[in-house]
Image (cartoon, rainbow, N blue to C red; front, side, top):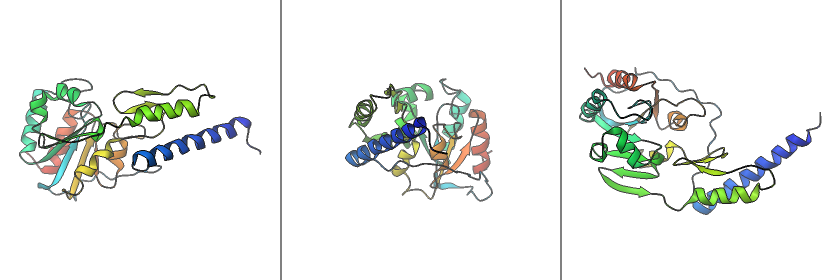
Length: 232
């Protein structure tokens, strides 16, 4: 059956969108866009080391260390302080550093973590020192190009939140932060609640460089970390 005019038009539109992605990728030296068609990851703890000396534990914020958009519970805060004495820990949040600090108890508290990645790693801190900040306004350029290229389709393209573009099918995700830790740690554990396809933890959860763990709330995070490190 011949393709309909609509399907052909949609195919041409996606090809045009892909060409924009490739052009901007080359211009700004962005890592190639990855597609995760199939991703099945075992969450077995049987092969995980009980010691955290050669591992790093990376944590999402909302739904992992705190209830969504809430401040960290004192008990969870105490648990994380205890964990930092046992293993190297890091924060990977989609929000900016100020928002992360508000949720985790202040900037001084956040900087107790040796690795802090705000805006999915576009802003990176190591031992309290700013190591990287991406400020070449790629999103603004991207939105401008999309609006120009697809002006005939009646679509609206805009910058959404801290790191996203509305109507943009692929973009930066939390795997961006892994470049800062993958060479220094044998095992990278990641804990997040939005690990299903479409969630903002999905890509880093599926990444072959990490051992991904799905949690549903801060209490779940405590139980799973304690199981992995056999903490009492």
